[in-house]
Structure formats: C-alpha cells, structure tokens
Image 1 (cartoon, rainbow, N blue to C red):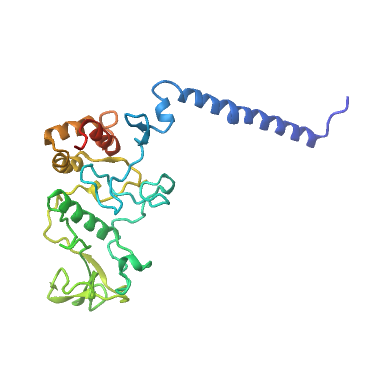
Image 2: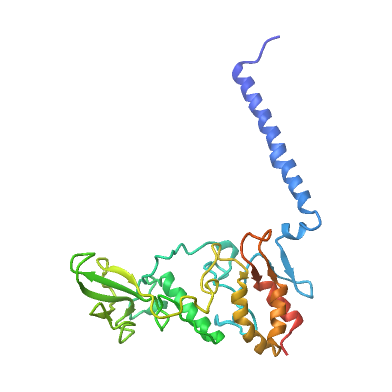
Length: 304
C-alpha cells in the first residue's frame, strides 16, 4: 500500500488538530462556561449584575456607577453623589465603552492655561491639571455639604497652588523671579501668595514659557487631613466604579436627611445596609454602592 507523501500527512495531522481544538475550545468549553454561569447564585452576575426597580425595569448595574445630576450637570441634592468619572464617551460619564483612567499622576500640577479671549470652554488646547481638578472638586463639595473644602496645595479659589521659581544659577542660588503658574494675570489681580523668599510673586500670563522654572507646590495652611475624602475628588482606574467610601457617604447623610425630610439616623442605617466590608475580612476597604443605595432611598424614603 502506497504511503501518502510526507507533506500531505503533516497537513492532515494539522487539520485534525485544528478540528479537535476548535471543538474543545470553541464549542465545548464555551458551553461548559455558559452552563456554570446559569447556576443559581451566579446567573445574576453572569447577566451583568443588573438592578431592577419595583416595576421590574432595569435601572442599572451594581458594577457600573451613575451620575445623579440634573440636565445642567448640577448635583441632585436628594441623592448621594458618586465619585467623579473620567470616562466621557458618547453617553457622557460612566460610559462603559469609554472605560479608562485620565493617565494624570500626582506630578501633574501645572495647568495649560487658556487663551483669555476663549476661556476654558472655548480653548481646546487648554487643560486643567489633576491638582486643579481635585482642588475645584473639593471646594465645590465642601460648599455643597457645608464643610471646609480646603486641602493642601490648593488655593482658596480652588486652583493648584504651584509656583514656578527661577534661581540665579538654574536650580540653585538666589531666587530671581517667582510666578504662580496656575493663576492668569487676566483673571486674577493678585496671586495666592504675595512673596516667596523675599521675591514678589507674579501671576501667569497666557503664552509664557516657564520651562526654566523649578515647579514648587505650596502646601499652605489647609488641614493635613481634609474633610472632603480623597475618593470624592478622584476617579477610579476604570472611571466606572459605583462605590464610594463610608467617609464620603457619611459626609452626605445630613444633606440627604434634610432633603428627604427624615432623620440622619435613618439615612445612616440605610447606608450601613449597603456597605460591604473587606473581601475575606482583610483585603480592600469597606465601600458603599451608590447606585443601589439611591434606589433604596427612592423605595424606602420617597420624596413627598
């Protein structure tokens, strides 16, 4: 009996391997995973951890945050507010198709100032640093919740408190010039700090190049432990996290109680019901699911 040529035998063996692996990995394995996903207790998670209201309508997912704001983007005071979302897809913040971080790190402290004639909304090349974004959010949340929104390295007006310091010998020597890098001369009369090491501080001017200056953040006299928690002013890595810290939830309870016409204790009990502890008792931090909590608010303490 004649043997097939070697190259044909190799191709037939390869074809058999492809067919077998396709059957295992492309059919049997997916079906097995699908079957396991339908086990009671796992089916809800496999379907997206969907949340339903009393009428049976899908109102969201317990894995993806939501904004609780009006048409103008202002916070709805009767609801707990989520942490910021850096995602900004076609549907706005918390867009699952635009998941991702801002890629701005702790050293991102200098704003790219806008053309004064266009402003922040009109100048596409302008960009606020992570520090200024945090300062703005902290100040706004402090005003909303009736607490001190100041934090280190922030000015009283909610801008990153950063100086560009020029030295006579580059990085050493006497200070020859100081510029408040995030404050424009066109929008502020005096910088947040009048003098630095005996030199008068200037406000920044649009178009100036301060690459030769030494970037110097100024801590200021704000409390080292701000009243506004860090998660209230920063986004998660995905930009979709539906959770906030118990500290941020506690900060909002008085406002929610006043808006809902109930006691703070009743709101705190509801928060506690929707607080999850550390995984396995020691991993991670306790967290409050804002989406589930706000749904429970409407169900148990509806607005009158």
